[in-house]
Image (cartoon, rainbow, N blue to C red):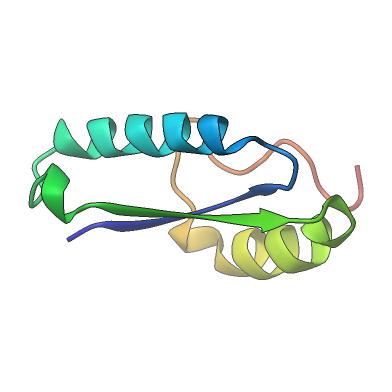
Length: 80
């Protein structure tokens, strides 16, 4: 049962969030997992002022081995 947690900078509309959740659910449905009825997608709004400390630092930088994606690590950093 995949449970996907998405953190994104605050300001996106509910329609944009639903569209993203639908695409994530479709992508999971197309892979060998339990099925679309068992997929949940939670979207957390993060204020831009807290992004580097609460997302980049704690989720990305401190968990490098658990970050997956087509593009790998983000192309930004606190030192950029």
